Structures are given as structure tokens and as C-alpha cells.
Amino acid sequence: MQLMWLKFAWHNSLRNRRRSLVTVSIAALGTAAILLAGGFALSTYQGLAEMAARSTGHLVIANPAQFDKDEDTPLQHGLDNADPLRQSLLADPQVRQVLPRVEFSGLISNGDKSTVMMATGIDPDSEFAVKGPFLSVTAGEVLATQSQSAEVMLGEGLAKSLKAKPGSSLTLLASTADGALNALDVQVKGVFSTGVPEMDLRFVYTDVATAQKLLNSKRISSIGVFLARMENTGPAQQRWAAAYPDLKVKTWLDLAFFYQAVRNLYNRIFGALGLIIGVIVVFVVTNAMAMAIIERTREIGTLRAMGTLPRQLLHTLGLEGMVLGGVGALAGALLALAVTAFLLVVPFEMPPPPGQTKGYPLLITFDALMYLATMGSMVLLTVMASVWVARKTVHMPVVEALSHT
Image 1 (cartoon, rainbow, N blue to C red):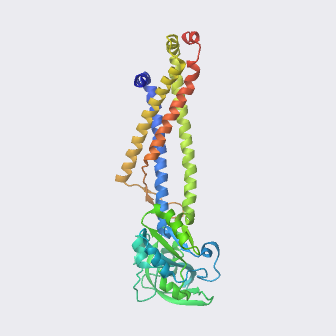
Image 2 (cartoon, rainbow, N blue to C red):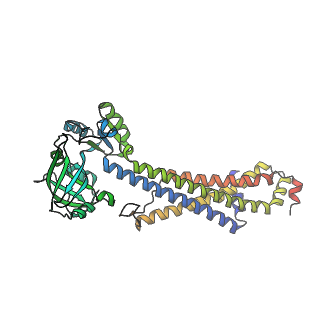
Image 3 (cartoon, rainbow, N blue to C red):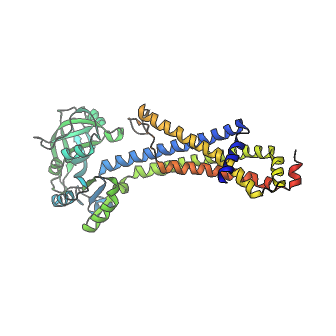
């Protein structure tokens, strides 16, 4: 019986092919627009999440004061005897690598000119092995742990400001952990670009040993823990927070303020876009069904006179809306899939975001749940619009419907 009514609705929708085609086209374009915008947002979220986790680690472990208070002297809130903690974390099968970091600021000089630097001491071999090419090296080479001399990598803007290149000698000046002033001669190993000019103008990388020698302390600022899977972040945080109650364990999400800001912005933008598209689809379907019902008022009256119940007519007209919405939603989903596959085969480069110098590939993420939810919503909107328009006509007195012109 249900198939008979569905077949009836299908033939009714074909009675005015032009109007049905317009309705289906609007539903298809609306579905495709929502899916492509949503896929782009998901791709952006995934890219930013991976970038944030790759930058800090999935988890960051430090003394609570390191996150909550400012330091009066370098490494005031740093970790003592971090090696046993590092070895304990590495014993966990879910951990890929544990990276120590020493963060400090000071001055860097070429002898004639000094400028402010924001420096980070890292374990070079492990850092670059785990993170991969997270820096774009424009000159020279990356740092190595087994170096015979103190070496640094400079941001591109900083190297240009100091007229430095690989092999140049510079001097780092910073306050020690005791509050004294210390200087250390270093050699430039490489020049890199992060894609953010403001960071490239101040950023310096060196190894942990060089940073500790300059700051006259064996402490480190924090430990970054890189897990095998991002999904393990929450359970690992709970496990280690209980195991190390004197320390604070934060996730990459707690520290990814840029990611959270972008996600909140995109949610508002694409939420408004989806709402606008939904309203347009409802108006188009409502208009199409209203015209169809007005033209068929006498037909509806005849069916009523033959004993057809109003709810049966509403059911039929709702099925017509479902047919139009379903065909449009399916066509839109196929169009979105085609565009998604096309972008994988033929890459397009997006322009650089504000404040950056490098673009990024345009990718659309396929998410089955998003596709099902969007298609279901589109069908539901068309059914509701059809029933809303038809409800008055199907309840019209039979005599009035039969005499309608």
C-alpha cells in the first residue's frame, strides 16, 4: 500500500516537470552548499587540531605555576629531574615520544645590533623526527643533538634583521635562573619560516643543553607528550593527572586558543549559512506545492467526494514533497561528493590567511553522519513545507473545492 502511494506521489510530481525540476535543483544546490561548507569547516578543524597537537604535543605536563603564574626569573617554575618522569612516560605503549622544552626570552646580537628574541630549547633529533617538517627551512640545516658547538636556528625575519646566514656567529643574552645576566656565543645552523611574519621576526630554536647552559639551570619548562592516536588524549590526561598529582596535565585543546576561536567563528558562519539555505528551500518548496495544489483543488475535491480522507491526501502530498526533497538531496550529495573527489585529484591552493605568508590546500572532508543528517533535514523540510501548504485545501468543504476555478 505504501509503495502504491509513493508511486502515486512520483507520478504527480512529474505532472509539471519544469516546476519539479526547479524545486529539485534548489534542494540539490542547497544540500551541496551545506555539505561542501560543512566539509570545508571539518577539514579546517582537523588541520588546525593536528597543527596544534603537533606544536605542543597531545599533552603538556608542567608545574601548575607554569600555566597560572608569570616567572620572575627564567625557569622559576620549571621541572627538576625531568629525566625519570620522561622515562616513565615513554614506558606507556600509547606514547610515541616525550619532548622536553625550555622556553625563555632575551636579546640576540650580531655585535652591531641587538634585538629581542623568543627562544625555545628543544631535543632536535626527537623534535624533528616526531613532528616532521613543521618548519620550512629556507637556508642551512636543522639542528642536531650531537653538535660540537652551540647552534641556533633563526626565524627568517630575525635573520634578515641581523644580516645573519648559516655559519654566522651571534651572541645570546638572557637572565639566568639566579637573576644574573649571561651571554653565550652561538653559530647559526639554519634559517626557517613558520609562515607567520611576526613569529619569524623573533623566534629562535636551540637545543636544550645550550638553553640550560645560557640560563644556568638544569630545569626544563615543560614536557610535551605525543601519543599514537589523538583519541587517546582524554584517557591519558586522566590517568597521568592521577599518577602525578603534584603536576598539571593539560591537553592540546586547553592550549589551542586559536583553534577554539576559529572553530567558534566557523560554527556561527556555517550555522547561519545552513539556516539561510534551509529558509530558501522551504520557500521554494512551499511556492511550488502551493501552485500545484491550487491547480489541483477540483481534483482534491473530487477525491474527497469519492471518500478519500483528508489525512490520506495530506499523506500523498507529503510524499510528493518527500520525493522532490529526496531526489534533490541525493543529487546534492552526489554533487558534493564529486567536488570532494575532484579536489583530491586536482589540488587548489587557498590564499594565505590574515597574518600569514603561506597558503594551504583546499580540501573537503567527507563525513557520513553529516551527509545523512543534511539529506534527512532537507527531506524533512520539504515534507513539512508540503503538508503545511496542503492542510487548508484538503480540509476545504467538498462543494467549495469542486466549484473552485
